[in-house]
Structures are given as C-alpha cells and as structure tokens.
Amino acid sequence: MLKRVCSMPYMHGGEKTKICFNAITRHIHGGQPHSGPRSFFGVEDFLDDDNSRPYTYQKEKKSKNPNKHISFKQRTIAYMEPFTLDVFISKRFVSASLTHRVTSKQVAVAGTNSKDIKAELQSRSDIPACLAIGRILSQRAREADVYTASYTPRERDKFEGKIRAVVQSLIDNGIDVKIYLD
Image 1 (cartoon, rainbow, N blue to C red):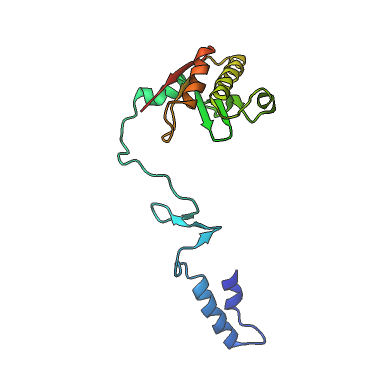
Image 2 (cartoon, one colour; image 1 turned 180 degrees about the horizontal axis):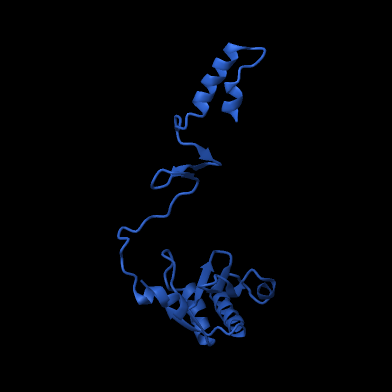
C-alpha cells in the first residue's frame, strides 16, 4: 500500500516528493533484513529450515539421530502407568499431587497451605507434615479410584528425608508407588 501511494506524484510537491518517497520505500520494503534481527516483544525472529517464513519462537532441539528406534516400553509407559506423583517441598510448605500422564489432569492434590490441613499441623514443613500430606493424598486418590502411581525424583532432589516420608506415607496408606531412581 505504501509503495502504491509513494509511486504516484503528489500535486503540491511534484517530482521531488516522488523521489523522496521512493528512497524511503526502498529502505523499508527492500525485503532484506536490516542491521540486526527484528524482534517481536523481545522474541527474536528466526527462519524455517528452507528460509521460507519467519516465526517468532525457537524450535525445540532436533534429535541427533532422527531414525532412532523408540522401544515399546517408551511408547507405552504413559498408558501402562498413567499416574505420576509430584512432590514439592519448600522451606515453608509441602505439596504433593497425582497427575494423569495422558490428559495432564490432577486427580488428587494435598498441600500444607490448604485451610483444613493448616489448622491441625504445628509446622507446615517438617516430617510430621509430610506424613500427613501422604495420608491425605492417599485418601483423596482412593476416592478418585487411583491405586498405583509412579515417582521419579527431580534432578536436584534426593530420595531421602521429607520426600521419602511423603512417598512412604502413600505406600503405608494403600497406594502402590513405583519409584524410578536414576
């Protein structure tokens, strides 16, 4: 649209205005990237593999071996063991949840920040609080007909202390937890 408007001479300016606008449109609409990459709200623009169109997100890393065989277990583990346990422990509170892997919905949640649990605990982040969270989470999981779960600790977490207390409390209260340690 700007090129079309600028290509027509103006009545008052004549030829000088036309030349000036042509110079401006040549720099704006040259089709080549200028000095640096453009940004869209702080996200840099990248080009596809065939340099056809820009997109404003980074691609995820490609596998080094695109023809790599994925085992049967890797393909079916989300369906064979559909529920995962997630435990988060901070200095102030403890929370745990059971999540369905395929639908990513939380089936049962328990945390020491909730009003009903706060009232009966002396401290919200010690071992008795972790045992109470495991007991309450197992009750809520049984209400939702969940009797098995798998747990893989995060990279920074060690399977000891408070995390072990939550998992052990779940096991003692009737939830079968498979623990995968690397």
